[in-house]
Length: 79
Image (spheres, helix red, strand yellow):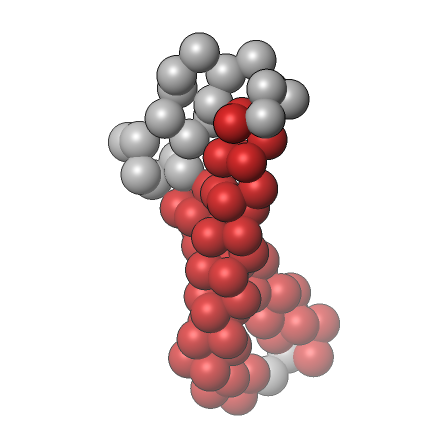
């Protein structure tokens, strides 16, 4: 569960969930199943941006922990 709840894992899960729910809400609003055709491309772009944000936030958290700005590192749990 450590990698699943890492900044990268959470960002990927959040990006995929957000994009899926956005298309689902739009589908309910316009009542067209054709919007589901956008799902593969939307998920691909969401996962790419989610990976970038997750890697960037992990690097920032490690830097903050190394500088003593966090009580413990959220990445590896060290004090």
